[in-house]
Length: 260
Ligand SMILES: [Zn+2]
Ligand SMILES: [Zn+2]
Image 1 (tube, helix red, strand yellow):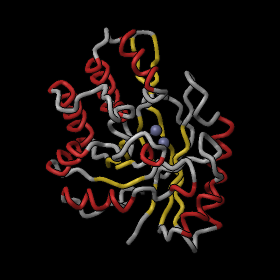
Image 2 (cartoon, rainbow, N blue to C red; image 1 turned 180 degrees about the horizontal axis):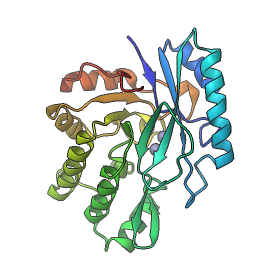
Image 3 (cartoon, rainbow, N blue to C red; image 1 turned 120 degrees about the vertical axis):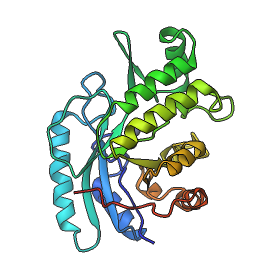
Image 4 (cartoon, protein in one colour; image 1 turned 90 degrees about the vertical axis):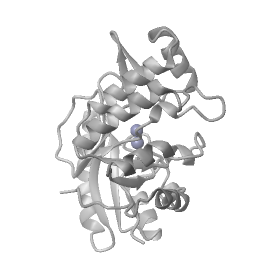
């Protein structure tokens, strides 16, 4: 089967391996393609993203490696652009549009910085109402432009066991479904992201199964990615994710035709 991942982080941002190490791992795993998606520059938080200088080097390096390995694997040069980022300096093959921060008044709050941070954000900026927080998150998600919708329900990162959100709650469902409608209208592809499984946060990929079922009903397109931060995990949980998607009725998990 054709396999690949368009969501790969390297030492240019918060990944543990170099681009070349990831390419070699992808070749070993018999991937037909690999796409890099370094964190694009966010001026309000420089801890995880590539600096402007680093991003220019990254752009050049991925281009060089794509050429070097062109007979073994198709290498794409992408970016994971944050929903609140305005920095846009290079022409990438594709963009993953991901929300890692939301606005709360004058503050910018991190979504996936830790369970404590999420609980404090809800308490301090959303009056202790987790659904108001989720509504703001999904509004920000719906606002994005790009080719791929990154980890659609990242707000559920810390929902293992004692949950912050009840996915059966009407307000939560409504917030998700209104975002889906808008993103489907933009013809974006939804990634089914196994990254938090590799890192032990979750026992399912993003997005939740009920969201994937809604996507299927609406004719949405999906693509499996590993949001990889370690080259050995490039295909983490792919087999079980493929089975799960087949059960829902999806047949194509690695269609990259949308890349120009
Ligand atoms: Zn992300
Ligand atoms: Zn990522």
